[in-house]
Image 1 (cartoon, rainbow, N blue to C red):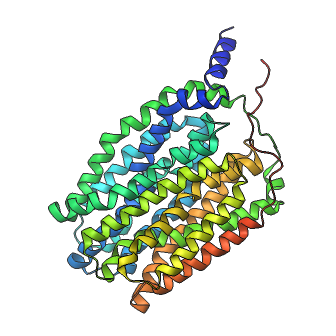
Image 2 (cartoon, rainbow, N blue to C red):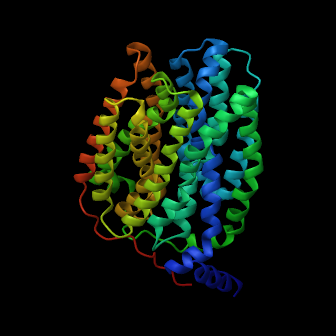
Length: 423
């Protein structure tokens, strides 16, 4: 009797009415936004370039050495993402996120105490990635996808906009802190911010855990099938190609955008403010893609977005610093549409029954591609003295991704509310 009452309550709370979804779960979206804002994928990544110049001046490290730390982070994300998915299923996302946010503060604090060893710098970023791997897009996409069905695209766009906020406010705020208190003060401020924000991330997800578990037991895939079935489809391989290409093209530019502008003669704080435009268009890309894919074919929209971004990056390679906003828009649009489109399209083509396995694998390939991008772009700069070749490479890769999306077949059906099993 009690089991039936709990199932009825959970089913009513998670009923697939668009208005009910947002009215019921707006705190979940807010938790996801804040979680991604302070998580290792966003705040640390988007502000990394702010520290490059002072660390170069104090320790004499090269851009390639500095960029290697940003290569370590996504490699560890790629290796640990299957385990994170398993822990999310067994422990619940709230415990995973709480553990990650609490532990990742330790290496960030230790970064403020560095004494000049680049190996220690790399080790601390490795620990930061290992401890913070549970507070990435993988977990927060799973949280949003579980609580939203009919408006899953828009919900994912809103939930994942936290990375855009980090790109918008992170560089200028951290640049001001670094200019005022030094780079050590910058790391201390970031650690304190994560600690203060953590309760606003964990508590809403924890409160919804019982309802989430009850309804998740009733969800089945609208297509079903095994991983072997997924591997035999062209859709899987197209998605597994396109999203890593986008990550490779955009991640290196995100990390190097501030030093790229400084090299073009832009003052450091102004460069950080211009880089903040990336966040505005990252948020716009997330919200726009989420709203539109609930209404049109997601693959066609993805192709258009990537073609626009490719054209803008190609143009930015040939213009001076007065048109730096062009690069910021292109980066924001491409990376902004990436992870929510990935989650939405995996659900659309493969269903929820194997969502975690398919999404986890494509996610791992994507972050693996992102891991080598900062290092490659740093090496391009060190060898050629500029980022011109890197900009052209990114433009070409986004164009290839757009072409790959155009090859996707139309899905058999749009995501629909998963039928509940009979008690």
